[in-house]
Length: 247
Image 1 (tube, helix red, strand yellow):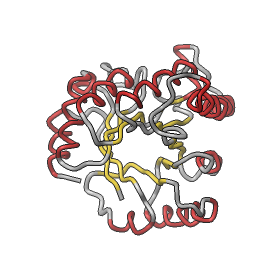
Image 2 (tube, helix red, strand yellow):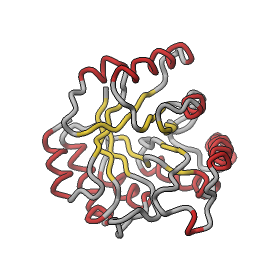
Image 3 (spheres, one colour):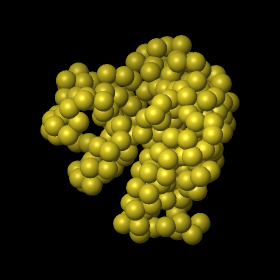
Image 4 (cartoon, one colour):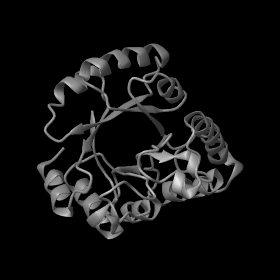
């Protein structure tokens, strides 16, 4: 099981230089990934928000080993052709370390309706599926250059547990990121279903867990990536303390 830092680029962390420093420290301390949230705005009390792609470029330049990426990008509010350019550029910049996290996004964070974005759940799901298929075509060579990772960067699809449609969607790609997973028993049940659907074993199960979680039962249940769950606006010092405690 791999361990990753996952932070919202809010407050002190809205400075991409801070994110880059933290990512470099995480790599030095032996963490496997450094992921960031993808938001335009966020609910109160958040005010300061950084762009994930610019921040991830800084992270890519400050590191050489850790996996990096957005957790997660709502495709319904992205222009897929531009996203294709951003993801390929970041994969090249990081020498093939990008993981692309994707999902519907949430209507509760004040970043869809105020900007004229799609709020209907079914329509966002349709745009997500169409967007992922389009990204795969761009990555396959419709655009040049192509990603370092072939045939494409890994795609992890997020969904709120226990909804089943996100699971079926994720099984077409490379991993599933269940949100609000209640415990390792539920994950073990999911892992059994995944093994039946994907006997090749080339599939990740990822979830966010509180910092004091006993990870043993989760690893035995089949979790492949344990991602840190911080408060909404952790300070640089708070994230650094978790990093220094080690994965």
